[in-house]
Length: 65
Image 1: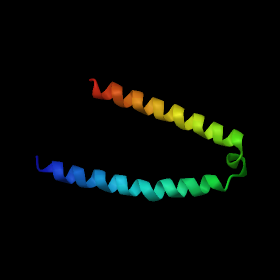
Image 2: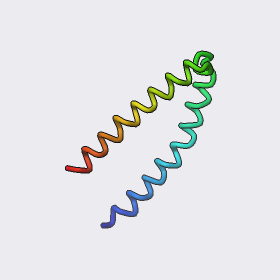
Image 3: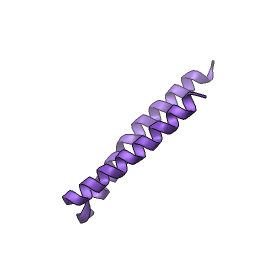
């Protein structure tokens, strides 16, 4: 049980690290002109939805084992 606090610490670091990563990706994608058009926004939304669905299905599959 000694590793539990260490695991929580590194999970917190991972969550905090995701903030600048998300911001950086957001700003990089803002620089792509096509992604600022409606078609680009819809395509981005579709890709994000597909990736989220695949990730959630994988998490569900792993957690049910």
